[in-house]
Length: 301
Image: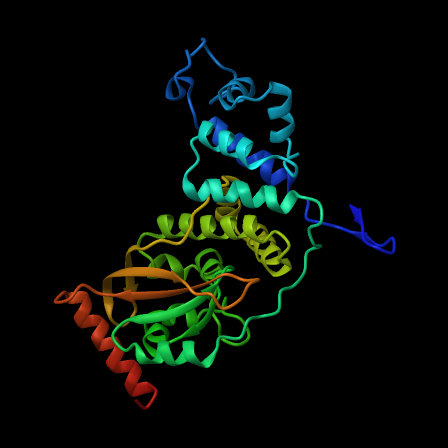
C-alpha cells in the first residue's frame, strides 16, 4: 500500500499469487534435457529447479526465488526477457508476464469497475452491413457488446441462455461453464473451454484492477469445477483465428472459420471484432445462408 499526496492510502492489486503460480507452472513443464542440462537423477517434483532457472537466466538463485514469490515490480525488462527465454514462454505468455510485472509496480490503482464503452454508430453500421458472415464485437471479459443479425441467429443458444445478462447480452465464459447447452452447441467443448479461460487469464494479467472481471472469475470459480481447474493451470492465449464447429439447433452442423481483429474503441478496454464465415461452396455456407435468410425474415429485412 502506498500514500497519495495528502496522506491517503492508495492500493494496487496484489498479484503475487498469480506471478508465483504462473512461473512455477511454466517451470514445471520443462525438463533438464529440454534446456541442455543433465537430468541429475530422480526429482521430487517435475520440471526444472529454481536454481537451474536462475543459472540459465543469468541471475542468482536468491534473486530468482524472490521473483517467483511475486516480487516482480522493480524487475528490468532485460531480466524478464531472460526469464521468459529460459522458461520458453510463448509470445502470449511473455506478454502476460510483462503485464503482471507492470501491474505489480508501485502506483497501480485499486480495483475499479470500468465504465462500459459505448460502441459507436459507425461500428454498428459496419456490423449491419455484413450479411453473409456473423460479425460481433466482444470486450476483454468476452461479453458480446454489439452484433449483427446473423450473429443473433447463429448464436441463438447463447442469446436464449439464462446466462445472458439482463439486457440479453451473452458472455462466452458464462455460457460455456454455467449452461449445459454449451456442450451440445460446441462439439469441441473441451478445446473451446480451454481457449475461453486462457483468454480471460490474459485479460486478468492486462487489467488486474478490473472489478467486473474479478467478479466474473469469482462467480465462475465458485460455480464451476471445470473452470476452477482450468484457471489454476495459468494457460494464456491471445486472440487468433481458426476453425470452429457448431451444432445449431435449426441449421445443424456447421464448420466455420473465424478471425478476430483488434478494434481500438477505448484506451482503457480491449475490444475485438470477430467474423464467422463458411468456405465458399460448402454445405456450411448453404446452412449459413439459410440462417441469414431466417434472420432477415424475423427482423423484417
